[in-house]
Amino acid sequence: MSKGGKMRKGAFGPGGGSPRMNPNDLMRQVQKMQEEMARVQEETTQQSITVSAGGGMVEVIITGGLEVQSIKIKPEVVDPDDVEMLQDLILAAVNEAIQKGQALMENQMSALTGGLNIPGLL
Image (cartoon, rainbow, N blue to C red; front, side, top):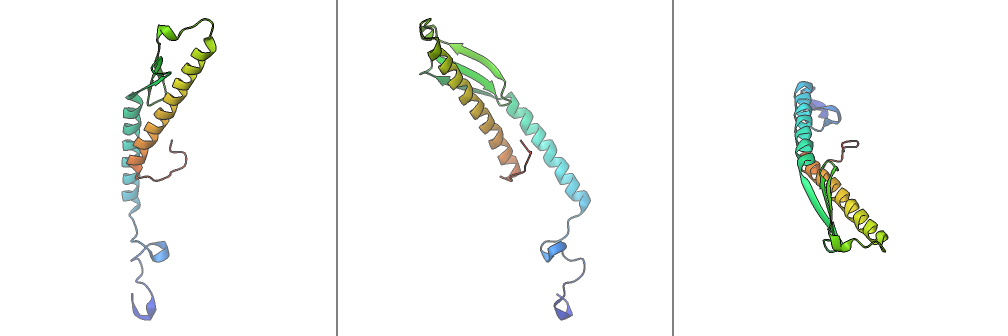
């Protein structure tokens, strides 16, 4: 600080907190983070998540991009007199797979952004 308790002009940014950041450096950092986020999203969408329901009677494989790749049903769970049970098992497996796929993407992005909550990011 200089005489009279005033801060030296240009030493700190608005609010007197941290040093000013060069706008070009900031843009480069933002661009680098965007590129890294795109890379992580692409890698995550390629990962597969396997979920089962009914003690393994129904198995769903989904990507991190929430695309269902396969649904496998064990023959012994197919009961023509109880189609509703099979429907419930498939529904449960698909919903759990979607939740795990969303969590995977959120975890990957959180690791990249350091836990910053950026609205509209995902």
